[in-house]
Length: 596
Image 1: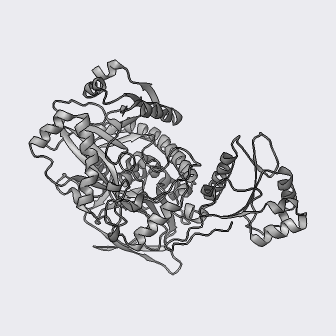
Image 2: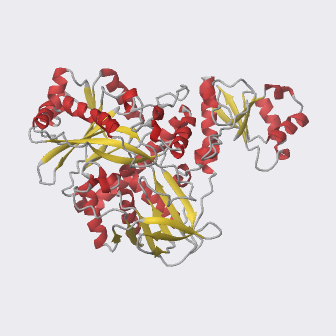
């Protein structure tokens, strides 16, 4: 996007990755010279604090070439209405510019072209590739709306935890998930949109205060390209992304409540607990958390002393000893994700869904007009009018020729399981933690009660973010052990006796349990739509960071809307080219365009 300002830009945060011209000299140009200059540059937007200047442009906009000059923005500290001019009202001039850029990105995103199905008729069978929780909930939505569904999975049927390394994120980690309004949030947003931050987290290892969980020498060009794209996005964009993700989560919460009401047996014996608590180690963290939860509409109440006596007895001693400062009750719930997903698979089978395990999609065949023609699997050729791919971290090239290719990185998370006999934890907890990597890769921890395979009560603890590139097998066990310190420190601090008991019994002498989360450079999920040769759609969803489970109902709705020809905000807000086009990022080349 080419932008002209008639003032000195307030900071480098505002021009990263965009073609921006500072042309105060145009303020005194006559109309003919002004329009000639705008046409020659091919400007998309003009930002000014001079309304007479913008009105002069508006009167002559019919002289601008079609498809270039579209937006006139007045930056001011006074509310006013001007025909044909968008007014940004903020007291702070720096914030004026940020809100203007966010507005431009928003209108740009809404113009992303999304294909619609061209074939209408009887509801056909839809093929879902991937059997993680996102596609399982999508299958439920499609069946509810009268579609026949087949599911392909590269993995074996997830009957037990025995082969957890063979599975994706849903079954790869421990048997626990939490829903909250800020799951999958923009983890790199620092709380202020105009702060200039060096986004170097993926160039430093966990031990050095970064997010990298592999050796730098093991990173390939496509991994470095992913990192460069992440580094290009400013904090004001991360703020906007954070708001969008939280809004999707709020919508998803209502959908989850509908599913819980309609299918109560689905949640039986799954450790489902319809309450959520947040615990903070310091008073500043507690105060900051309270403000944040109120802002997103999640806050229910502050915890009182009696709550630690009755609800969170495991935290009573921590509060007394000063190891925690206090807590909140917020909207959300916890669940044992393995048990829930297995029961959902059984329910879907009873509803007529066909599952095909151990069948890998090896490539996609296209027509000469770039329409998806067929899926080539390890067992057969599949031609389907509608295909929905939720690949997790796909190890392979089958997504080539899609915009999603190269967007899904591999992010490790670590898990630890403790016995719950003595602690008797009943409710899921989110902890704002301190200690190793807490300023970067492991700022929080999730703690969820559950049961082991033998039926004994356990506590699942997860924490940490360790980037290993786009290859999910690029695991460095030394860095993995370092990342696991986050969960060990949390377990030892929160449940010291249970932790020491496990140490004495040698239960931590095995390799740390981990999952591989799909992660994008922007922290937005992916939603890409391509036409199929049969007049239907090929849809890619994924990259939902820590929020695939949380957002699965709204993702399912976006899939249904696409298939039935309806617009959904996720179609363009999660489109993989949305930010790359706005910031003039050329995929697979380290090239950013600047002109000051």
